[in-house]
Amino acid sequence: MGRLVQKFSGTALPDIESIKKAAEIAIRAAEEGNEVTVVVASIGKTSDQLRSIADNVAGSPNARDLDMLLASAEQASAALFSMAIQSLGWPARSFTAAQAGIVTESRHGNAPIREICTDEIENSLERGEIAVVAGFQGITESQEVTTVGDGGVDAAAIALTCSLEAERCDVYSENEGVCTADPRIVSDARLLAAISYEEMLELSAAGLPHMHPQAVELAMDNNVPIRIRPINNYENLGTIITHKFIVPDNTVCSVALDEEQASLSIKVYTTGGDDKSLEGFGSLFARLDELSISTGMIMLLTREDEPAQELTFTVDKRHVAKVRSILESLQSTIDHPIVRVDTQIATISVVGRGLSNRPEVVGNLFDILSRAAIPVQMVSTSDLRVSVVMPSQYARQAVKLVHSRFQLPFKAID
Image (tube, rainbow, N blue to C red; front, side, top):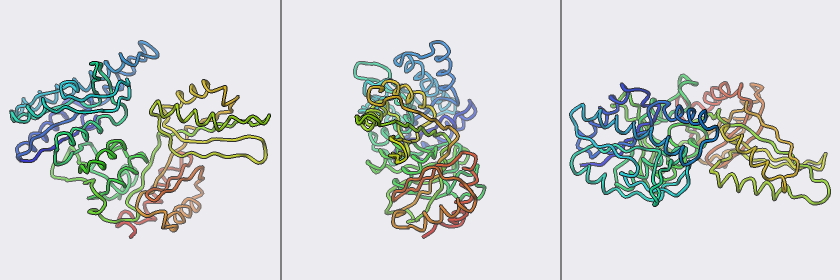
C-alpha cells in the first residue's frame, strides 16, 4: 500500500461541482490501494473576498483577526471536501491546521511552518479514511491561529508529504502540467513529462503559477517527488518534478512570464560628503526581509553626470505601498529620495541548465528582442535562468518569439 498527498489549488476548486470532481480523484487514488491525505485551498476567490470585506470594514485590519478570518475559508473548503467524499461512499475526516498538528512561528500573515505532529492524521489513515487538511493555516504553541502566507498551501502539502513519509505529492490544478510556455499565450507549447527541482524552482521564481518557490525548495531538500496534474483528466500524468539526474538534460526547457511585478527606482543625491545612501539601502532590504517581501532584479548605479546614486529593483505590485511606507521611515539615512514606480513592466525568463556557459543563449535572446524592436530595461543572468525586464505591452509577443527561436514546440536545445 502506498501513501500519497494530494493538493488542490483554489483555481482547481472554483465551485461545488469541482469539489465533487476532486473528491472523485481522491477516492480513485484510495481505491488503487493508497492512503490519501488531501490538502485544500479555499474555494475559488473566497479568501480574496474575505480580505476585501476586512479592508472595507477596518481599512487596515488587525493581523491577528485577519488570520482568524482568512483561516475560516480553508476550514470551510476542507469540511465541504470531506462531505463530498463521504457522499460518494468513502470515509473521510476533515482537519483544521490545529487538529492536523501544523505548528508555526508566531508571525501573523506569513508564519513559517515549524513542525507537524501527524498523529491524528495517521490515526485517520489507519481507519481507512481520506484525511482532508485545511491548507494556508497553522497554530502557534500558544494556540494562536496563523496563516502561512503566499504559497502556504503548497508548503503545507510538501511538509505533510515529508512528515507522513508519503511516496509523492500530486498537485492538481486547471493546468495540464508544466509546459515549455504558458499555453494561453503560446498555442503550440509542449507538455514537459519531467523537470528537475532546480529548473522548477527557477520557473516558480520567474512567475510560473504551479508551485510556490518555497515549496519546491522544501521538496528538493527532502527529495520529495511532485507531480503536477490536470484536475479534468485523471489519466494524464502531467509533469513529474524530481532529481536532475533522472530527467532530460535540456539546455533550455521553458519560457516564463511574470506580469505581476513593478519596478522602483530610488535616486538619492550625495552632496555634502556624508553619503549614507548605501546604509539606507541596506536598511531598506533588511526591512523587506523582515516583512518577507521578495525582490527580483536589483541594479545600483552611481551616476557620473551628477552626485547621485540610483537603486532600481523589481517587486510584486501588491507590495509597492509597503515599500513606499518603509522608505518614509528611513528618512534619516535615505534623505529626500526621488522615487519612481513603474507598474507597466513584465519579466520574461528563459530557464534551463548551464546557461552561464552558453553565451549563444543570451546572444539569441538579445537578437530576437532587437529584431522585434522590443526595449530592454533590465537583465539578470545565472546558470539556470536569464531574465529580461521590458515594457508590459511587448511581453507576450516576446514570449512567442523566444519560444519559437529556441524550437521549444519540438525539442529543447541540446
